[in-house]
Image (tube, rainbow, N blue to C red; front, side, top):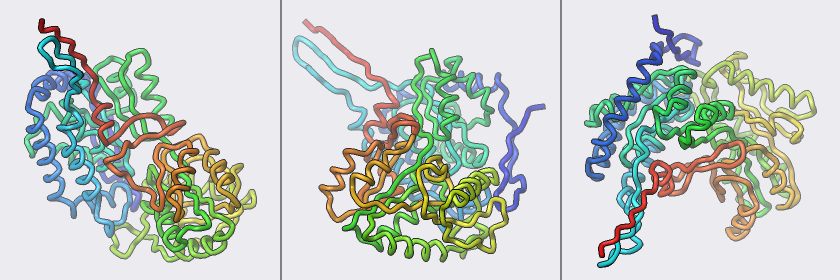
Length: 458
């Protein structure tokens, strides 16, 4: 009898879904089918592949009410936020719109004597290992451009969001994408590693923990299979003395707390100039205190449970350690805080970088705030991290933001916004956040390989 994978609903700890894991032989067969189907898929006109992906996106859009409820049941996001179709559609549509230009050959010479050009050719079979925190949007970041570029795709979704992979497969197949071209698989870690180490796939995209990314790279060692990773983050925000205080509080605190803080590019550290510090903290505490923690199925709930009890336990431990070391916690326990997945959001002051809450990824509804006296101090603190995904600068001076941004060790620099993925810009990171190039023109380049033609005509 096959082993199974379970999705435990954070709402009440019950088993929401259980699915059989694919055996090693079944997984290898699926990869073989994907490889056999790839040449014919890539031979289809680009416009046809684009149209099929767009049709699949439209299929997902027909079920947005169901999406919101299913996400609440699987990972705890309140139904009031309506699912993920807006960002899902934005990202897929942008990549579809730039495909013809992004995948066009670079013609160096086309004369009577020579044709010299660089074409973009699909890798072959792309393995997408998707996370649970934004399960539709993170998956489509790679699934859409991979298929458009002529690859076939194997999707392995996180255990916490098993149903999302099934829903995506339903939509793509209903739209006319052949079943061998897009497959959703339930895999354990060992089988996933075997797919990579045995060269049954040609490209790996992984979003998840640092440890998970290391496992992917270890599996690919010596195979020369490209591995694109987006791993941990500890994204900082910096509020300069000339910032719009109200906008900075509203946006940075939302960036720290939305989705119960479970955002890849969520704000986990905030540095505020001393001129605005007291007012910033006061307003931040008032905002977080206004949140309603409770069941995500209630339209009045603004913060649901964390996706799993063990995630909440890590955040509680970081907060407790910080308070024991001298930090001040400003939010009183909320009535719905059950010591399990339902966790009171927290604002901490008197924190230092010696505390794990300011150093390790929290991935939960907690943020530490530190007073600074200069740009130089803020830059040093923002860079004092093993991670580098995004950084947010709040200022009225765009030139100064660009100047500060050039000094930051990060993948994306924001000014007066945060916690957003622009599909026209490359989504990338540095340090322990990993490396890769998602979305934008560079996303298509990552999902294809260059092939040069040097044709002498005479």
